[in-house]
Length: 327
Image (cartoon, one colour):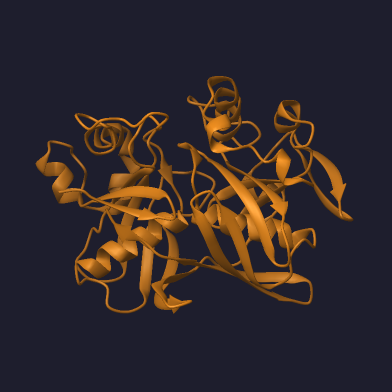
């Protein structure tokens, strides 16, 4: 049976390859092969596990009852392989909340009793596969969860394969001008591209009133425009990133605290996203809005603690704390 978990409002189903095969969905038992053949099975898996089916769809709810499907593990001992399937059938390179959920699922099954590597396989041509994340069980403010080591972030258009973007300055730092975003809202003029295993475009706004809310982003006009930017072809335009890019907006709060909204590549507006929170913290650091150390990223689904390690003006690593509960 597919089991569903919630991580700060991000909901994923977890299903083994064997479970999907038992339902007539031909997922190979090798993770790399499964990623390479996802066109043959991923949409069928989403239809079987992520759609509302006979369940009542709440008013205002998204088309799918979850944000995606985690397929794995492909073995019974660490390191563990998995695939992150978006609801459009595409594969993600990394998801902080998804990996938190997967770690909790492994823990619940007795497969993960200490820190280990989780290896996400995908089919993107512009990033190495698998993307490896070290996950360590831990407590944070008396809450049991996991710290995810996301490595050293990359900045700028070249880090995410963005083309056709301009250059502007914010707080004395060179950032990007993404015309399709600024055409939607003149307050969306300053964006920082960040790669934390997967690609992000973080738009920095001077006032929280310029942040889009999730209900607004679900409206057909804005949704279609953002999908054209965020999604890879054929679902989107793949501009400025041919493989698509996750979109975020961030505004300063007090201290080392920022407020963010998220529109995920392959999904749409979401209550929270772990890698998005990490990218937001990195982008805010790059323009001096926050300092290294612990950063609180506030999203509709909850607040994500992010740790930034810097030295001599260079950001060396980013880590995310996550917790998940079974539904």
